[in-house]
Amino acid sequence: MMVGMTSAMMGEALVFAERGGAARDTILDVMGESAIASPLIGYKLEAMRQRDFSATFSAKQMAKDFDLLLAAARGTNTPLPLAAFVSQVWSSMIANGAGEEDFLAYVKTMETLSSMTPKE
Image (cartoon, rainbow, N blue to C red; front, side, top):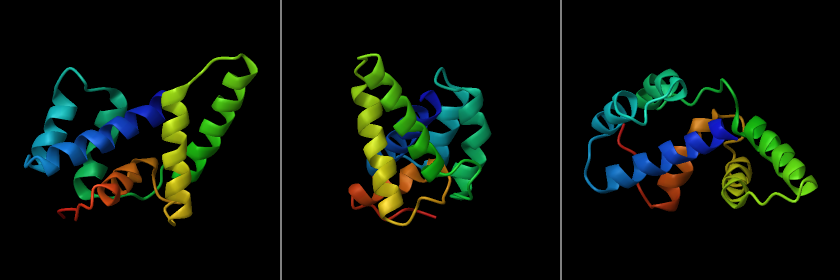
């Protein structure tokens, strides 16, 4: 859940900052060197810089894991509203043909929702 939620936060923050005029590399530098940095972010920074969405863990796999965690949460009567929302984005990625891409392709879905043309 934390890996999926982190990728969602990264994707949304990146699109928001770029739409506001910040440079992608600057945003990624901040993500990798500030208080929000984590091993996961460090591991994925170069792929994000290169827009390389070759799967190390696919969106389809992430969707399956989110389905499992949401089912477990229902079994314990634990609401997970953020996870449920992010799960819907994984479903959207699969429906739009990005299910085999890396889970960080979440950023592409956010770009589409924002009518943003990605800068290569």
